[in-house]
Amino acid sequence: MEERRRENIISAGIVLISIFSGLLIQLLIYKAFDVRLKDVPIILLAALWIGFSSVTTYIVCDLEL
Image (cartoon, rainbow, N blue to C red):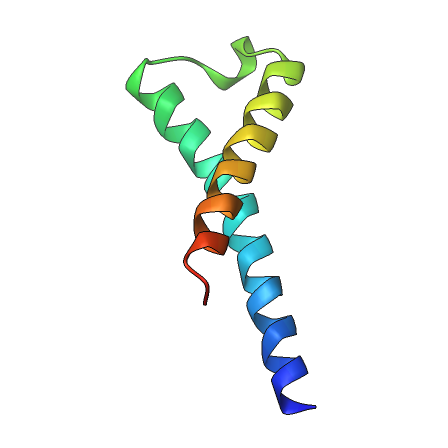
């Protein structure tokens, strides 16, 4: 029971890390290239967010916590 709870907490942490890291990576890219957020199409925002979040999730899952 305790092991299952620990796995759930780790899974929730991975989800939160992937969501926020996808947004953070985009923010850093936009700041580096001096792009205003309102000039970026919503489709591009969503696609990059999903892509960067997926890469982060893949990296974190490979760490085998």
